[in-house]
Length: 77
Image (cartoon, rainbow, N blue to C red; front, side, top):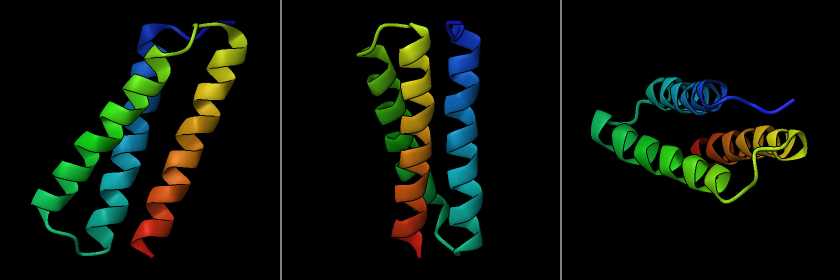
């Protein structure tokens, strides 16, 4: 089953929100948080737009979002 545009946006927003919460907990400045959140959002949007919206690509997008979150977490640790 393909992801809808709304589901894609929700997945992206959840990743960005998780990043923001983690960065705030680490005491990062709001300016740095917003800059990095924008980069994260743009990267996720670009990654998804380069794929076909098939079930396989949808799973790949979800995996990519998890990978990006893991990288962000490791960067802040």
